Amino acid sequence: MANPIQVKLVKSPIGRPEKHRKVLRALGLTRMHKTVTLYGTPSVLGAVRKVIHLVEVTEQ
Image 1 (spheres, rainbow, N blue to C red):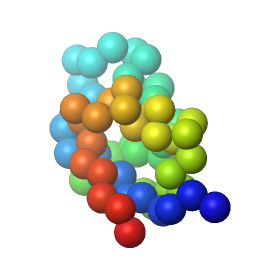
Image 2 (cartoon, rainbow, N blue to C red):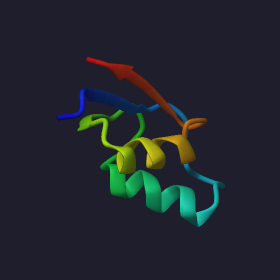
Image 3 (cartoon, rainbow, N blue to C red):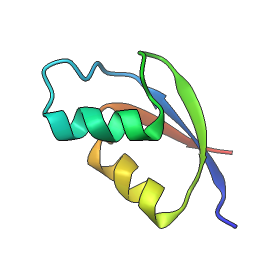
């Protein structure tokens, strides 16, 4: 099983492309400074990579 990671939204998606906002919504990041714990599967890591400039990632 993949290692869990914590993803925190640190920059606002306002003014960003619609694709970035949809990726954040899919990751469960709906508000600023919200943290979600996800498993580091290839699909999740690919989604995080698309919005890495908006989030902060830490491994658990």
